[in-house]
Image (cartoon, rainbow, N blue to C red; front, side, top):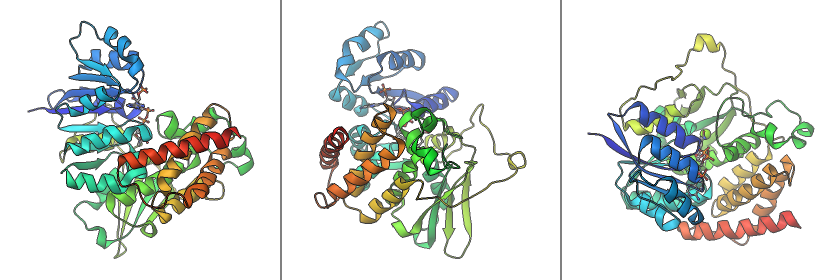
Length: 387
Ligand code: NDP
Ligand code: MG
């Protein structure tokens, strides 16, 4: 019997890796609903290629074009929030949650409320509303499978082990394109230089976050929620080859590490396999003799202040990560359009965290509250940039 897989963020980088795997295993999977943001051409083309039970775009204005592009296919479709929720409500054995940014919170949470098995790529869900997501996953009987490569490696390395037996968990960072650059050079970096990731091929936003190490900061917060482990048992180490992704340091001194070539299809296949292993056509096995050496170095929080800011947000808890994420999304967009320099990102995020520290203390109780804080911080950050 085949498993139905719906994809939120189907036309993105993770979405494409997912559809690639589904197409490789047609006997095992069938395509459920496909959800995108606003690119009607891309999602219509994808749906024509791989089929779909339903196609939805978040941007309501794209409705007529989408209808037109899918005419004759018989695939039901719609645009706007209701259509997205209708897509999520379609039957699915696995929902891949791979919308980028805080926009992913609502659809991901909707899947969780239906008790679905959710393969979670949208780390922002846990960063912005981690307490609420973990609580509701339990409440509605949903399972959350970590897609992020580091967390997937940690989950595999942990196996049936107990978090109580773990001295610490370590996630690796490639170090991004600026790993060896001086602060002066980083300060003058262009968006193109920041987006040129040395090992992974990903969407634009996460590329910039990787260059600033904010992505690692978001991942520390993600790990805290996924594994119920506190900040002082979570570490980051820079590993430029991106082959070791996560390490479990057990309390007896043994270490279990998760390795794979930097290919998101590996953690995605692990999630889609639901306990069974899938073959990946055109996958690259780890050949350590060919790789030669795996190197590690400490992360430099002076040249990469976003990591320091994220660690502080994780320690402070409450709404600090929600605030940080919103300011970062505004700052990254401003950097991409050339409105601020690279260190303008960490400057704005730090200012927002300081400004809102006394305003929002408690962790958001639910998605609505998280999104209200998110909107408030975005408005403040946009204004702060214009001033
Ligand atoms: P992309 O930018 O490549 O893709 C984002 C997808 O989300 C697109 O399909 C986009 O559609 C869709 N989308 C955007 N806004 C909305 C919205 N409001 N409602 C519904 N869909 C929307 O991102 P990535 O694939 O790189 O990343 C997705 C998530 O996975 C992020 O949270 C990221 O942090 C995480 N992740 C990604 C990794 C990677 O290797 N790429 C690794 C680990 C985690 P459209 O183009 O039409 O707007
Ligand atoms: Mg990652």
